[in-house]
Image (cartoon, rainbow, N blue to C red):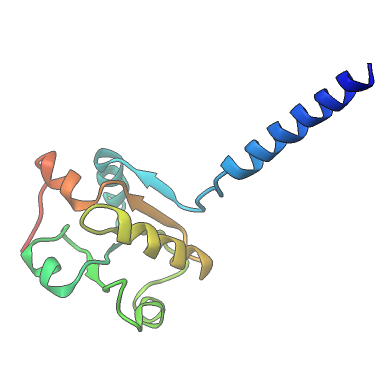
Length: 132
């Protein structure tokens, strides 16, 4: 009987440990597909932010977007200068990695952020418009 209790205790602790290690913190921003992102930015109050390099931005970007390189050491300060915290921000990069990082930074600063999942590559793949 005592062995059974110890065994059950061990199993419960093991399962709790697995659950604690596997839980991922929930992002405080929303990832959107290209179609969802397109519907979102139809709203003129949504700010469009491209966080790629200037060279990447000049090769083609979503119309109406501003460019702030997320790897620029002044990214946060520039974002505060150019963005309005009272308006949502639609952020994207090439594949979605950099924009995820930018989204996390912006959320910490108090912005409401939507991220284009899989970046502008998915946007282009679906034949959506870009401007140069």
